[in-house]
Length: 140
Image 1 (spheres, rainbow, N blue to C red):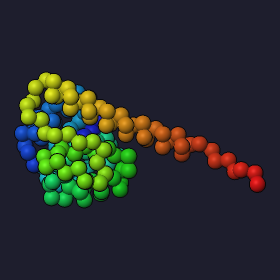
Image 2 (spheres, rainbow, N blue to C red):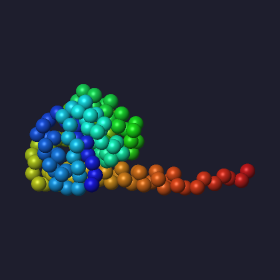
Image 3 (cartoon, rainbow, N blue to C red):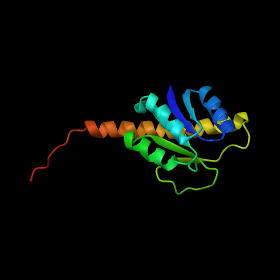
Image 4 (spheres, rainbow, N blue to C red):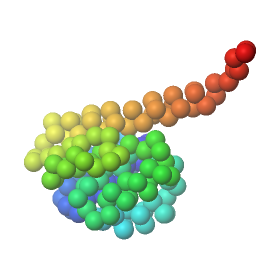
């Protein structure tokens, strides 16, 4: 099961995405604020986190992204884009908040989350392969 930290001050969206993820193969960690997200991460093992879904317009959101990425460089970040601010450093994917919670919208979100999390796994796998590769010195 993959763990997703969801940080947004919109309770309806937080509940909707949490339910969507819980119905699939994800464990949602919902937080209504960045301080609440920090508290959740403190109580969990950071290495267990697979994806951060965050509203970048929340106070402290950019610091949260930087802080989590410093401890977990392969962490993928998906921004919920209520203000269309695509200048946030460290974001791998953007999604607008859904206007409806239909089954097709849920499936769209899950496909995008699967894609983003799969890219994390591939990056981690490549990094581990590169780390295991023996280094050969060239003859001078």
